[in-house]
Length: 122
Ligand code: SF4
Ligand code: SF4
Image 1 (cartoon, rainbow, N blue to C red):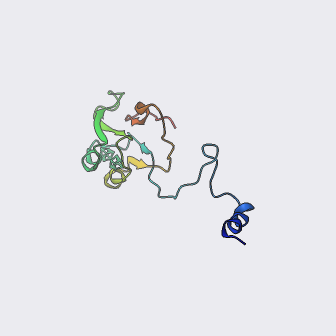
Image 2: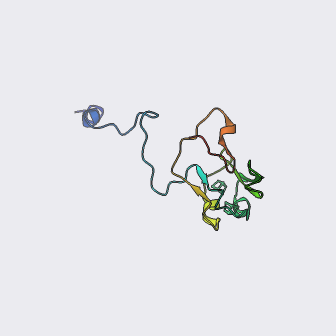
Image 3: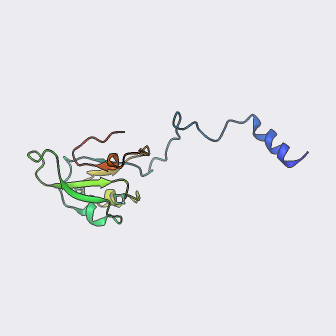
């Protein structure tokens, strides 16, 4: 029997290895480094995340609610981020974390800028 035919027969009745993205998606590894989550209440505005970021993806900016949050807080540009996780690793309070969310494709680059104190979409 020829090799191609053998291979076709072998895989014909097997479950597909691929998924029908975006209708289905694969589960990530528990330590997968995806989109950031920022808890402004835990942030002490030390700026360490900004200093350690190798891609200059973080800027320290004022929060929207300047009365409640009068200091500078990290704003993450996911378009520049390489998802190294250093910001999370060095943050002394656990205010910035990378989640397993990898749904970030968008035609609008503004959506990729995570403003401090604002709930990001998706
Ligand atoms: S994951 Fe790495 S590249 Fe992305 S914001 Fe954090 S430190 Fe910067
Ligand atoms: S997120 Fe963490 S490292 Fe960054 S400024 Fe806030 S407390 Fe400091």
